[in-house]
Length: 563
Image (cartoon, rainbow, N blue to C red; front, side):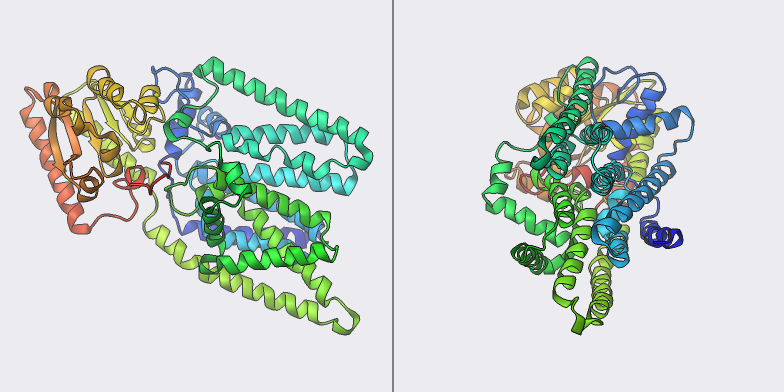
């Protein structure tokens, strides 16, 4: 294979990825701002804190991504939109190179090595979450690196050095996201051979030793820094339940629903047909004893790539955020499987032209169906993206800085559920109603409401409170009489969906100010009330956005879904 072909085989899909990504312009998900704030504070010498001067709380679940961003602040190269977009592009380009080289060996064909990259570049959920500002492109890069290492061992033979490297990659995956630990069995599963068990056992020991040492060091660091073995996000959002593995193995309806949803992510309404065809083709090749290790490796990566999505609680954010590690290997396996099936059925002396004709027709069909599946979804998301970081900066960060100025406040605080953009620019002490960056809220909001109310009204006493939609219901501040006693409405409304969810109780959404702060500041209060009244009036005229800072983390997730 010529070097020029290799370059174009990666460059063309990457250009397609860039064009697709440009559709989403400068959108960054607001949650990414939490990681940016922690990285900035670390680089500035304040430690891993959400705001300078606060105690360390692990309010993020992407440790390695924070560590990647922090040095860029030291070098003064970080911009909250441009920098993560460029990092995403660099990591995606590296992933495409690694994936292409792996697929070239695993499939033995040029077309089968480039087509998965093209499909990835067209895939709405893959592109959206790769350029969201979150850790997804780093996650995919590490998995593609692990696949390349496994394939290289297959090409050149195993070595002790590769086992050490594989252990380091597996640890990096677990430090990128906690659910990344599910990928730990991949390397031994695909490289351990009982026929040569002694050298294989030595490699396995090296792999496990590297993985264990790095994870132990990471957990020791977490305990030393945050005083816990779990990130605070676990207490705020929850994690996999104890029965999810059993549910998957026993094909429980709840888990099978998620499997079919995962099929919808790439095939929309054709998900059942696509899954059935993949199962049938796999069974056929296994029955004909033509299912080789190369296919098994891609299938293993695809299956393990699906596990975070299947095991984690349902995510309210659009377009399958937790499934990003699944897509590269699903496409790789699907195309490799089709190529292997074609060789088995068509590659015969009397059918010499059929493989190339079928390959060309199949490629056109798959690309055409992908365009039909994803074009509308990408346009819809671009028109109304999930909780833009820039909107939260404007509506909750800068706006409340302005309100504090109108009141002449040198110090103040705010309780609200939209955090990333707020932390990025706010001069106020920020209390996170979701609990990601607040130990007390994370542990009491769901499990001990009275202690939660005591913390808010007797200890935190935030100057401002903003609640809307789901978090009006979840916080339930009106259930405690201290809310009405201590807080003056700047703007309030009873949203019908919240009242219905609360069984008819008139929980109030809106913006509120402590009465003791408002005392003697009548002119400033009236100015704030006028500004908010005008904002909500114009908002009502325009209509509520489908997804935005007034839904976003405040949107009501379906039952059982995480925030």
